[in-house]
Image 1 (cartoon, rainbow, N blue to C red):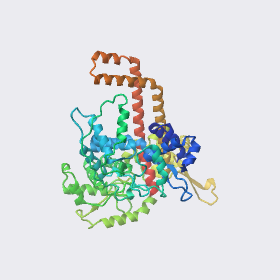
Image 2 (tube, one colour):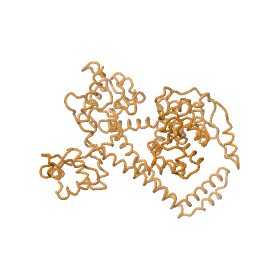
Image 3 (cartoon, rainbow, N blue to C red):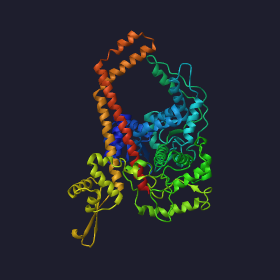
Image 4 (tube, rainbow, N blue to C red):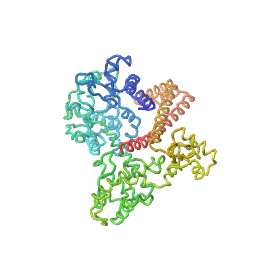
Length: 597
């Protein structure tokens, strides 16, 4: 865990959960696993406050707890999950994806689960139905059955999953959403396992319980003085049962990442070939999205008949045209692998075609040879009759990494980082080393058509920033400089990790700038919110237009202009955070897939 990751995690915790939670979470990230007593001593916070902070972290999956390392009876230790905290940055993308696939109902379901960490199905359905009813016209309301249907669809497609039970008690995977102090106090008693279980390790991870929930959403009235407190007490005293008590649900982030990867593959196929081929690939990925693991190297084997039957009728693709497209997808015309190998071009492990902006030549051929025999065996087992297109089995797999994408896509904007920071000639040298693998300084000068002095300075600049590496190949064992070849090369994995750290730093700077802008204009923002609240109350009570105009004049024209400028700046910063997060997703996927392979 690097300093940039800890800094970004601290900013995300502070923004979403407050300063106290940020202090405890950052301390756990820096110090590793610690028990409750040590956390209290080193953070100088009260025991109750630390328990509440730990409860919040556990509730949202940002902290896990296990039994002590000294054996049975030792204090429970808490450990912060850096990867889970960084997922907070991707919350808007998860919510937007749910809205695109399942409408407003799916959007609110995912939003509620992300805000509260985990919830039961009945409470989620009630809350979402009430929120939808609140935005409907007078006299209309949302039925619980409609929200339950959307919830079931999200579970069927694995976007939602059950929280794993703790210690076999049949409760949720973290802590039940009760009072913070009681949950934190109950955590040590439940931590009997060595490591927290994964949701997929339980057979009922994606099974929806029968919930007896009948009714419609209720429209919330504007509470009077003290009415909101009475409503909160009434909600706590509500003991109505629905049949799903103790079964909590959470968002399956890996399934969302698999969806992002599939959409990137479909977009890359459409850019490379045409829209029809991308729809065929979309059908293959959709048929295998639930049966294929998110970390699998290839999808479920499918025959041409299965693909043809699963194609939507609106595509109007005849069978012989489908066979031609499948043959075109299998026979990669851009990069032909060595003789005897089978090209299966739809790569599902290196996730995003924009990764090629940094690594246009894929992985080394040595890595390809190690996996060649296993892939050929899988292909032989999945083939029925050689030469029979009707019995051929197609899969989205990996043999020639990145072989599917064109070199035109690789060169377009491939080195924006080097182009902006070091100039176009340095980007040309970097692209040349990626293509040629190993080059001497004289060869770089000739191929890049750059004067010797400038090429030498650029190479040393790239070398000092760890963007290129220098490899020594001696002719004799004494490593004499006059009898040694000095070859420049690009090691892709360290470069990806360095760019990933730069992206973390960029996101942290954007968040700090946004918080600074908001803090500097805090008084103006509070005034604007008060005026908007007054206008809303007056409009609800049926005030006259003259009264509304008088309230609107409480904020002057320069203040309105300053508010517009502030909103524009904040929107730009938010948009930049989302764009950088897309690059973070690409680089994280590459690093994780390369490390596991």
